[in-house]
Length: 336
Image (cartoon, rainbow, N blue to C red):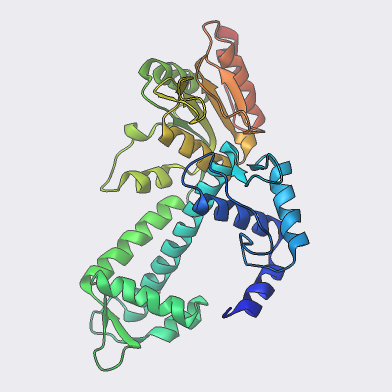
C-alpha cells in the first residue's frame, strides 16, 4: 500500500480523542442511515488508518462503546452508531469542511495582501503556501479551486505564478468582514433553536427575554445581509448558551417496527443540537420538549426539560442558565 508507513506513523502521533473521532467519522461515511450495522474487522478494515495493531483498534472501539457513541450487539454483528455518535460524526464532517474553507480563505486573503489589491501584481504560489504553512498539494488545489471561480488568474507559461482578479478582491474583502463578525463571541447571548411550534417558541423566547434581557438569538428575526442560511447560522452561533426546542413536527419509526410511529423534532433541529453540544459543551445546552416527542435517550449529559403546563420548565431552565454563568433577573423567577 502506497504511503502505508507514513499513515501508520501519523496514526501513532494522534491522541486518543483524534483516533476516536476517526472511528466515528469512518462509521458515518460507511452508514447509509442511522442504525446501519458496519462490519468490523480490525485487521482488514481499520476505520482510521489501516493500523495493523488490532489491540489498538479494539481499544478505540471499546472506548466508543463506553462513551455511548456506538453499539455492538454481539461478536457476529457490526458496529452501529448511536444517535449521539451520529450527531458527533455530522459535527466532525462540518469541521472538516470548515477547515478546507478556512485554508482557502486564508490563501486568498494573503494573495490579496501581497497584491496590494492590484490585479496586475504577480505572486509566486509557494511563497504564500510557505507563509501559511500549507503543503504544495494543498496550495495548488486551492489555486485550482479559485481559478475555476475566476478569483485567481494563473499565468499560462508558468503555473506557479498567479494574480488576483477583481472578483477575488471582492471575495477577500467579503471574507474579512464575515471573519470579524464570527470572531466576536457574545458569551451572554442565548440561541433558541426551534421547529414549527410557534406557541412553544414564542412562550419560551419571551420568557427568556424577561429572564436575561434582549440577548436572545432567533435566527429568522435577524437580518440575512446577503448570506446563505448556513452562513447566517454560523455568524450568529457565537453565543454562551443554547436552548433547543423539540416539538411534534415530524413522525418516524424504526425500520424494524415501522408501525410504531413517534413524534419527532425536525431534522435541522436535531442537527443544530449536535452543533451546539460540540461548539459550547453539553452543560451549556438545554432541550425543552413537549411530552410525547421522542428524545435522544443516549445523548448523555444534555439536560432535557418537559414543556409542561405548570410552568416548572421555567425554573429548571433559569437554574441551568445561571449555572452556565449568564446573569439572570431573579425577580422573574418569583413572578413565574
